[in-house]
Length: 186
Image 1 (tube, rainbow, N blue to C red):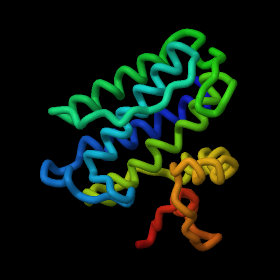
Image 2 (cartoon, rainbow, N blue to C red):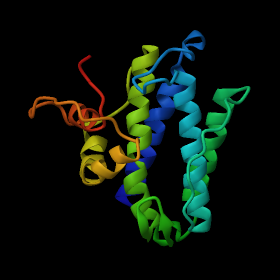
Image 3 (cartoon, rainbow, N blue to C red):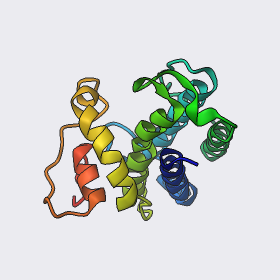
C-alpha cells in the first residue's frame, strides 16, 4: 500500500465516521460550503467518489457529477465508499497511468490529490451537524503541499474559497482548513 492510498483511505474512513453519526434531523443543516446543506455535501462526495472510481477503472478524466439526492443517502454513501475502495484494491492499480484530475500520471498521484476532498468535507459535515470532526494533522500535512500548489487554479475554477488567515503556529489541520477557505475557529 502506498502512502497516498493509505492517506486517502484514512480520509475516506474519517469522512465515513462523520457521515455515519449525522443525526437524522441534521441533514438539512447549512454547511461552511455556501449554499450547501449536510445532505448536499454528502451527495457531492458520492459524485466525487464515482468520478474517482471511473478514472481508476478507465484511466480517463472524469468530472464529478452532483447527483440528485438519493432516497437513502446513507445507503448511497455506503455503496459509493465500498465501490471506490474495491476499485482501489486491485493488483497494479496504483501504477496505472492515465489522464486524471491532476493531468497525466498514475492512480497513486490521483489519490495524493483526491485526499483533500474527504478531509475537507468531513470537517464541513461535522461542523454543520455537531458531530466530532475526524480530520488529522497527519492527513492535513500530506494534503497541504498538493493543494497549496494548486490553490490558485482551484480558486479560479470555484473549487476553493479565498484563504482564511490562521496563526502560523496553528495546528496543521487548522492551517489546511484556512488554505481551503474555511475558518477553523469560527
